[in-house]
Length: 257
Image (cartoon, rainbow, N blue to C red; front, side, top):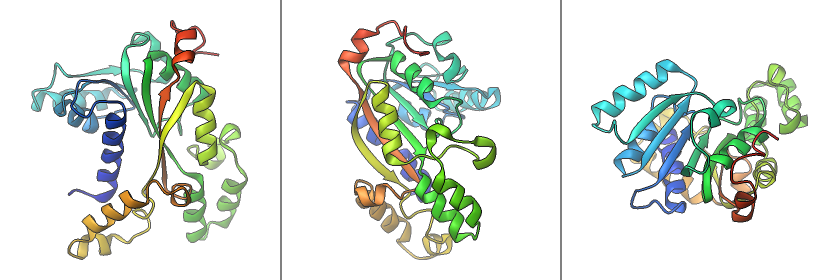
């Protein structure tokens, strides 16, 4: 097993593909902000076809090399872009699953980003969204003695976030669910990611035999508990595109509204 944090994030991708019906491969997957393709290549090895959209040409060059080394060039493609120009690069209703991990924290408008995601999904398709949890960020700031920032985070809301003052956007669980519902998504599963992993000293995880495996097992057990999910460092929502919403806007006419 690799670092617990990395394995938890990969497991969140596997959970999404399983829920989307791709346990045996065969999904068309869009990985937004997929970078150098660590997840994309692993997904391709499981039998999926993966498109990575990322704004960094250097990351996409690394993605191509990684796919070539794994003999997966046909199964993995990279496109330079982001959520704002997504429909310039991919067709509407062309994916079964969109991986949107660590993206909504940085986009100008999360609602518009999810509207674009809805447009490129096939009816009944799924999105997996992972965002940073605000309660965990508040706790981390308080424990570090940065009480002023902790107070500012506690008073903030995702829809009125000041990126210049507070850095990347942080979400409450209800905010994430409301955001998805507003774009026609029905939540299927909600998980907490890194409930404990960011708090346990690395000396314990790396120094004690079996500690990594035990921490991973604890994380997997706690991830679906609402009490723990709300305070986890990462919030994951896997949601299905409502068939009625998708059929009422098949060409993505409302994606920018």
